[in-house]
Image (cartoon, rainbow, N blue to C red; front, side):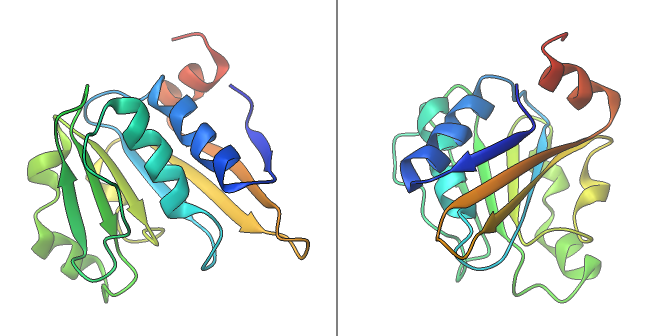
Length: 151
């Protein structure tokens, strides 16, 4: 899987999420990094749809975390924007659900990496021409191998 992506439309961002659904496994942590409007929720929507999640995947901004079941794997979707630090993440008890789920955390950089031995960081950005970009940054050998297609 390519590491750098240009995403001209929200559909392209959702398609990248769908492609990630082909490589995620139970216990995976995906950390989405990027400014407001960069496509974090759109990417998660594509991932959820490709996993077979039946209900709409919407931003968990006001509820902090949502669990979507009914697909190949449960999808835990977290918005860490309003969390004050690692202690707030611990209070959510996310590690109790990460083992059997795919956990996607928006705004989680520096807060949630301890939830898994390895994780995938997706750095999303929005250029001045409103085109989004994504850089997939694997943290750990397992993610390196999956992105390279060797696992």
